[in-house]
Image (cartoon, rainbow, N blue to C red; front, side, top):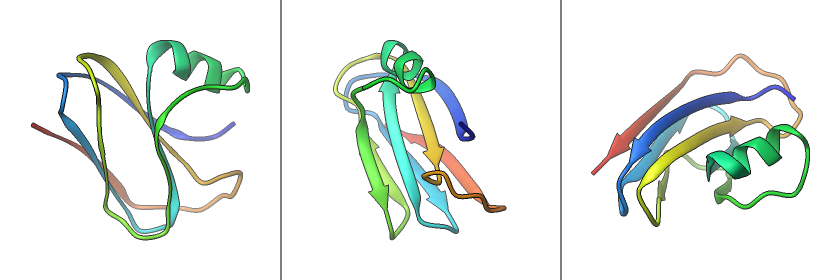
Amino acid sequence: MQHIHAREWLDAGNRVRVDCDHQCNVLVMDDHNYSLYRRGQSFRHFGGFFKRLPAVVSVPNGGNWNTVIDLGGGRANIRYAINYLN
């Protein structure tokens, strides 16, 4: 499973902003759910599929959060940026 991954400590209410030049899945999840995602099991996340970007996703509580950009099985050379907003 190929994907782009970033991990950051965020406080409750912080937002993840993903800019990408290609439609994609933007998934924000805690460490446990990221582990499930990597194993191909059912997992919980915030975000989803975005045709129009930037995508902005808020986190409900403080902790380490994983941001994943996934092209849904497709392959492409993409330009992207992941930023964290208070």
